[in-house]
Length: 487
Image (cartoon, rainbow, N blue to C red; front, side, top):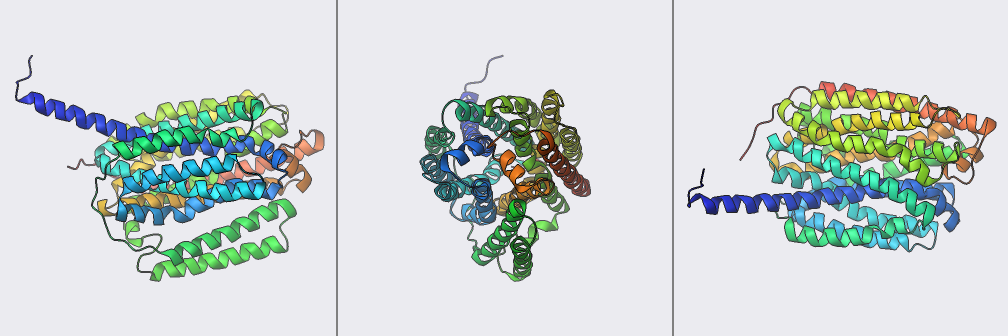
């Protein structure tokens, strides 16, 4: 059957639009992939960084925590900046800042300098992560966003796999500095592609920034994290308790401010939707329970079992592969049936994976780690695309940037607290010297010390399962939703 001549221009125009949309989607996926690479690659390199820079346990913990903290505090504010000045423009600027920060991290002469340069990197990461969800919501109608977020999930899992494998190879055979330098060529390419292919697709909105609210949130979280990390290193008495109390007090002040602020960090009108509320709370508790699991597993493999970073990385890769494969399918199913069922089942599967992690011992088969990672990967592949699409599908178009920022804020609060909480719970079951030896890989341990460390891991994994169970509750309570196409 031949196409009539008058239809050829329309077909050509549609093909061009489809190609442009695909290229724009590729830029978003690349940004997510870069973020995932940086998340997993740093965990594997911490022991080598500590030895080379003569850094302390607390300094190395803050190499990870400061990045997450800055991204968390800036999430909603950067989303609003994107709503006001253009989401694609701010997203692309994030690539430039992230790339520059990565180069500086690789050149760091000391632990404190690395922490400071991670702050620069985090600023770019906040620009990227807080606007990516809104850009996808601009590009796709509600009945196609689940599939789009599924492809984003592929980017995350591919990035996590590359981060683990490259982190293991680079740390074992080259130098830890190249885990940051590797971002530079990728970032340059992504910056050029982003400025060329990402277009502004939404009206510019004049929105106020809540700098006071963001400052209170940052101060409260910083005090809480300082309390947890110093408590993990020196015991929960004296200064750590004062820091936790001060952090809790500041968070109360933050809550009161948010109720009265004209343009709060967390917009209350978004929570009028039951689906939105349940989705972001599920994201919070999922991150609380899940984020630190990889870190604990890697430390067990290196500290107790004596594996190299490269050997340890290979055992957890299958989980990310499975999660990447399942993500698009789960996203498409959520477009048709809504997010509640898929996301809730995914969370349950993740909890099962963490339970398998809790079965490890000093002599358990290493394949048990791979099994646990694979089960958890299946769960994450089901949860993330469905939950993310539910948040954006149940947000007003004029607040896509703010909604994406709120989702990232809740998820990042969970992530940053998960790391500190897991470290504290695990360290509470062992002497500080053993905690430092294992968490920073300064030496392999055995005998009673190894038993104490494994006992601490069990306590952390049980706490993680309890938090995931709370995420399931909020996921189920979000209610049913119907995705309808829009123009």
